Image (tube, rainbow, N blue to C red; front, side, top):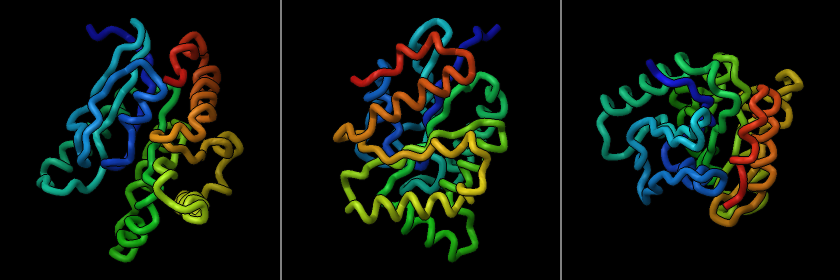
Length: 206
Protein backbone atom coordinates (compact mmCIF):
# COMPACT_ATOMS: atom_id res chain seq x y z
CA UNK A 1 0.00 0.00 0.00
CA UNK A 2 1.33 3.42 -0.97
CA UNK A 3 2.30 5.57 2.01
CA UNK A 4 0.46 8.90 2.18
CA UNK A 5 2.42 12.10 1.57
CA UNK A 6 1.63 15.69 0.65
CA UNK A 7 3.08 16.93 -2.63
CA UNK A 8 4.62 20.29 -3.53
CA UNK A 9 4.51 20.16 -7.34
CA UNK A 10 6.51 22.09 -9.95
CA UNK A 11 5.19 21.92 -13.51
CA UNK A 12 5.74 23.77 -16.78
CA UNK A 13 7.05 23.62 -20.32
CA UNK A 14 10.48 22.11 -21.06
CA UNK A 15 13.40 24.34 -20.01
CA UNK A 16 11.25 26.71 -17.93
CA UNK A 17 13.56 26.28 -14.92
CA UNK A 18 11.51 23.99 -12.67
CA UNK A 19 14.47 22.00 -11.37
CA UNK A 20 16.48 25.15 -10.67
CA UNK A 21 13.69 26.64 -8.57
CA UNK A 22 13.31 23.38 -6.66
CA UNK A 23 17.01 23.49 -5.78
CA UNK A 24 16.73 27.11 -4.62
CA UNK A 25 13.65 26.61 -2.44
CA UNK A 26 13.92 23.09 -1.01
CA UNK A 27 16.48 20.51 0.03
CA UNK A 28 15.63 18.36 -2.99
CA UNK A 29 18.44 17.94 -5.51
CA UNK A 30 17.03 17.28 -8.98
CA UNK A 31 19.45 17.04 -11.88
CA UNK A 32 19.59 20.35 -13.76
CA UNK A 33 20.17 19.70 -17.44
CA UNK A 34 21.49 22.12 -20.04
CA UNK A 35 19.00 20.97 -22.67
CA UNK A 36 15.17 21.08 -22.64
CA UNK A 37 13.53 17.86 -21.55
CA UNK A 38 16.23 16.76 -19.11
CA UNK A 39 13.56 15.64 -16.64
CA UNK A 40 12.14 12.56 -18.34
CA UNK A 41 9.80 11.22 -15.69
CA UNK A 42 7.87 12.38 -12.65
CA UNK A 43 10.47 12.58 -9.89
CA UNK A 44 9.47 12.65 -6.24
CA UNK A 45 11.93 13.87 -3.62
CA UNK A 46 11.14 12.94 -0.05
CA UNK A 47 11.66 15.92 2.26
CA UNK A 48 10.04 14.28 5.28
CA UNK A 49 8.03 11.13 5.77
CA UNK A 50 4.83 12.91 4.75
CA UNK A 51 6.04 15.70 2.48
CA UNK A 52 7.58 15.36 -0.99
CA UNK A 53 8.65 17.71 -3.76
CA UNK A 54 7.56 16.61 -7.23
CA UNK A 55 9.48 17.62 -10.35
CA UNK A 56 7.22 17.08 -13.35
CA UNK A 57 8.68 16.60 -16.85
CA UNK A 58 8.17 19.41 -19.33
CA UNK A 59 4.73 19.47 -20.94
CA UNK A 60 4.95 20.30 -24.62
CA UNK A 61 7.16 20.09 -27.67
CA UNK A 62 10.69 18.82 -27.07
CA UNK A 63 13.26 19.01 -29.83
CA UNK A 64 14.76 15.68 -30.92
CA UNK A 65 11.97 13.72 -29.23
CA UNK A 66 9.24 11.76 -30.99
CA UNK A 67 5.63 12.84 -30.60
CA UNK A 68 4.91 9.49 -28.97
CA UNK A 69 7.31 10.49 -26.18
CA UNK A 70 5.55 13.85 -25.72
CA UNK A 71 2.15 12.14 -25.63
CA UNK A 72 3.34 9.62 -23.05
CA UNK A 73 4.69 12.38 -20.80
CA UNK A 74 1.45 14.33 -21.10
CA UNK A 75 -0.64 11.24 -20.24
CA UNK A 76 1.54 10.60 -17.18
CA UNK A 77 1.15 14.18 -15.99
CA UNK A 78 -2.64 14.13 -16.46
CA UNK A 79 -2.88 10.82 -14.59
CA UNK A 80 -0.71 12.12 -11.76
CA UNK A 81 -2.78 15.27 -11.18
CA UNK A 82 -6.10 13.46 -11.44
CA UNK A 83 -4.96 10.77 -9.02
CA UNK A 84 -3.20 12.97 -6.47
CA UNK A 85 -4.89 16.38 -6.69
CA UNK A 86 -6.16 16.06 -3.12
CA UNK A 87 -2.56 15.62 -1.94
CA UNK A 88 -1.31 18.85 -3.56
CA UNK A 89 -1.56 21.84 -1.19
CA UNK A 90 0.65 23.94 -3.48
CA UNK A 91 1.62 23.72 -7.15
CA UNK A 92 3.92 26.04 -9.06
CA UNK A 93 3.54 26.62 -12.78
CA UNK A 94 6.96 27.76 -13.98
CA UNK A 95 7.00 29.86 -17.16
CA UNK A 96 9.98 31.03 -19.21
CA UNK A 97 9.65 34.82 -19.50
CA UNK A 98 11.90 34.84 -22.54
CA UNK A 99 9.73 32.59 -24.69
CA UNK A 100 6.12 32.78 -23.47
CA UNK A 101 5.05 35.54 -25.82
CA UNK A 102 6.75 34.32 -29.00
CA UNK A 103 5.84 30.68 -28.47
CA UNK A 104 2.25 31.39 -27.43
CA UNK A 105 1.58 33.73 -30.33
CA UNK A 106 3.01 31.21 -32.76
CA UNK A 107 0.75 28.48 -31.43
CA UNK A 108 -2.28 30.75 -31.37
CA UNK A 109 -1.83 31.52 -35.08
CA UNK A 110 -2.00 27.78 -35.73
CA UNK A 111 -5.21 27.48 -33.73
CA UNK A 112 -3.43 25.64 -30.91
CA UNK A 113 -4.05 26.52 -27.26
CA UNK A 114 -0.75 27.83 -25.79
CA UNK A 115 0.79 25.28 -23.43
CA UNK A 116 1.09 27.64 -20.45
CA UNK A 117 -2.60 28.48 -20.80
CA UNK A 118 -3.48 24.79 -21.18
CA UNK A 119 -1.49 23.84 -18.08
CA UNK A 120 -2.96 26.63 -15.96
CA UNK A 121 -6.54 25.79 -16.92
CA UNK A 122 -5.89 22.07 -16.45
CA UNK A 123 -4.69 22.57 -12.88
CA UNK A 124 -7.51 24.99 -12.14
CA UNK A 125 -10.05 22.44 -13.46
CA UNK A 126 -8.65 19.99 -10.91
CA UNK A 127 -9.48 22.35 -8.08
CA UNK A 128 -5.94 23.71 -7.63
CA UNK A 129 -4.83 27.34 -7.39
CA UNK A 130 -1.57 27.43 -9.36
CA UNK A 131 1.22 29.74 -8.25
CA UNK A 132 2.60 31.17 -11.48
CA UNK A 133 6.35 31.85 -11.38
CA UNK A 134 7.44 33.68 -14.53
CA UNK A 135 11.09 32.73 -14.45
CA UNK A 136 14.34 33.84 -16.15
CA UNK A 137 13.54 37.54 -15.91
CA UNK A 138 17.31 38.14 -15.81
CA UNK A 139 17.38 37.25 -19.52
CA UNK A 140 14.93 39.90 -20.71
CA UNK A 141 14.42 43.66 -20.46
CA UNK A 142 12.04 45.05 -17.84
CA UNK A 143 9.43 46.04 -20.41
CA UNK A 144 9.51 42.46 -21.73
CA UNK A 145 8.89 41.12 -18.22
CA UNK A 146 5.83 43.36 -17.90
CA UNK A 147 4.71 42.29 -21.35
CA UNK A 148 5.06 38.61 -20.43
CA UNK A 149 2.98 39.07 -17.29
CA UNK A 150 0.26 40.98 -19.12
CA UNK A 151 0.20 38.47 -21.94
CA UNK A 152 -0.16 35.49 -19.58
CA UNK A 153 -2.94 37.17 -17.63
CA UNK A 154 -4.86 37.78 -20.85
CA UNK A 155 -4.39 34.14 -21.86
CA UNK A 156 -6.16 32.91 -18.71
CA UNK A 157 -8.58 35.85 -18.30
CA UNK A 158 -6.85 36.45 -14.99
CA UNK A 159 -8.57 39.68 -13.98
CA UNK A 160 -11.96 37.95 -14.01
CA UNK A 161 -10.88 35.04 -11.83
CA UNK A 162 -12.05 34.85 -8.19
CA UNK A 163 -10.12 36.81 -5.57
CA UNK A 164 -8.24 33.75 -4.30
CA UNK A 165 -6.26 33.68 -7.57
CA UNK A 166 -5.24 37.32 -7.57
CA UNK A 167 -1.95 37.06 -5.66
CA UNK A 168 -0.61 34.09 -7.56
CA UNK A 169 1.45 35.53 -10.45
CA UNK A 170 5.00 36.67 -9.70
CA UNK A 171 8.21 37.22 -11.64
CA UNK A 172 11.41 35.51 -10.52
CA UNK A 173 14.95 34.61 -11.48
CA UNK A 174 16.19 31.30 -10.15
CA UNK A 175 19.69 32.19 -11.36
CA UNK A 176 19.95 35.55 -9.60
CA UNK A 177 17.55 34.84 -6.73
CA UNK A 178 15.21 37.69 -7.66
CA UNK A 179 11.88 37.55 -5.79
CA UNK A 180 12.51 34.02 -4.50
CA UNK A 181 11.65 35.22 -1.00
CA UNK A 182 8.25 36.27 -2.29
CA UNK A 183 7.76 32.91 -3.98
CA UNK A 184 8.81 31.12 -0.79
CA UNK A 185 6.28 33.07 1.26
CA UNK A 186 3.53 32.44 -1.28
CA UNK A 187 4.16 28.68 -1.20
CA UNK A 188 4.09 28.77 2.59
CA UNK A 189 0.80 30.65 2.47
CA UNK A 190 -0.74 27.95 0.27
CA UNK A 191 0.46 25.29 2.70
CA UNK A 192 -1.19 27.18 5.56
CA UNK A 193 -4.40 27.65 3.61
CA UNK A 194 -4.55 23.89 3.10
CA UNK A 195 -3.84 23.12 6.78
CA UNK A 196 -0.38 21.65 6.26
CA UNK A 197 1.56 24.51 7.79
CA UNK A 198 3.82 22.04 9.61
CA UNK A 199 5.79 21.77 6.36
CA UNK A 200 6.38 25.52 5.97
CA UNK A 201 9.85 25.34 7.47
CA UNK A 202 11.04 23.10 4.65
CA UNK A 203 10.43 25.85 2.07
CA UNK A 204 13.39 28.18 2.43
CA UNK A 205 16.09 29.85 0.36
CA UNK A 206 19.26 27.85 -0.25
